[in-house]
Image 1 (tube, helix red, strand yellow):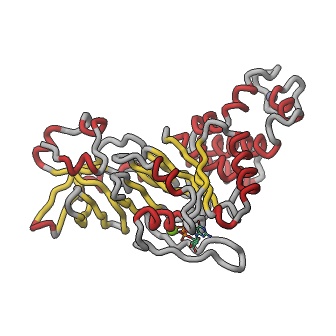
Image 2: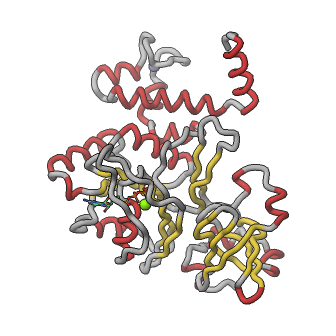
Image 3: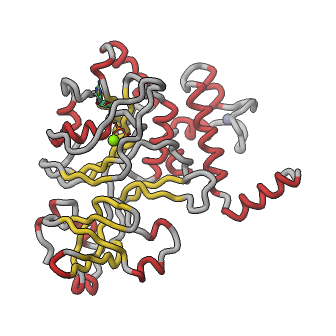
Length: 349
Ligand SMILES: Nc1nc2c(ncn2[C@@H]2O[C@H](COP(=O)(O)OP(=O)(O)OP(=O)(O)O)[C@@H](O)[C@H]2O)c(=O)[nH]1
Ligand SMILES: [Mg+2]
Ligand SMILES: [Zn+2]
């Protein structure tokens, strides 16, 4: 029998349908709250327990995908009055937010599992950047997670500026919800609360210093997690949060705080690109040549749209850049090594 407390922390019908009857006889269920090296903090709706993964799970793991991520549901074996626990397996994931790190062998990093909606935060004063926003959107769209854009620190901007920035996003991506707020006088905070559907899991993404942790503290109505002012010299965040952390709000919504990313990493697949740059992909279908690269070709519908101002040039450039990265990622590790070796020998490929 599955108890209410698991439903309260996100165990919806989707997961219940995918539970293994045999494993349910042997183990209990819990959700990964945070990870510190080889030690996992899990919550079963009643207790927080420290756990490790079994040697078998470790032995069978062939990629980072095979290890638990924050937000994952796992089969847990609990010993000795909850002083020790073992994670035996991961329940199938509904969604998985991940990124590719350039040039590293173990180049896949799991950000969070079983997220319903990702909140991408940019601060209105220093961090607002459409190209970076597009990059985040590609990552989120690729995982089939609904994105919401939060523009923070509205107390530092005059309302006209705020409206202008909001309109810039709306003009490019009319289908994305944008919420303006700040944590000083809490304007807009209720709009964010409206987004936080009980039983759903959210994830905060964005550069260091945009106010991710401050938002969580505001929602909790207490200074539970550490925040730090951004640097006075370069206006950048101090990388205050160092670990992903699943937080349970009183309302029943769950929200994962993440450390600000130094580099966003590359995009992995084409799907997220197509979703994020839908209007460019659509126009590309109208180019005269099937293999149009939209650089200088005659009859290029994309360039015509840039020309007449429908598509900002920076957006097209960002699309091309991300597409190139994506193609590069498609190459296997071996191919990359080959290519680098040839480059060293002066062979062009
Ligand atoms: N003026 C103003 N400052 C804010 C607001 N929200 C956050 N801050 C400040 O911004 C600074 C950085 O906030 P954090 O919450 O630590 O930022 P973070 O996104 O969690 O950063 P990392 O953990 O490094 O990724 C702190 O000094 C906050 O007080 C806001 O709405 N208005
Ligand atoms: Mg933080
Ligand atoms: Zn074209």
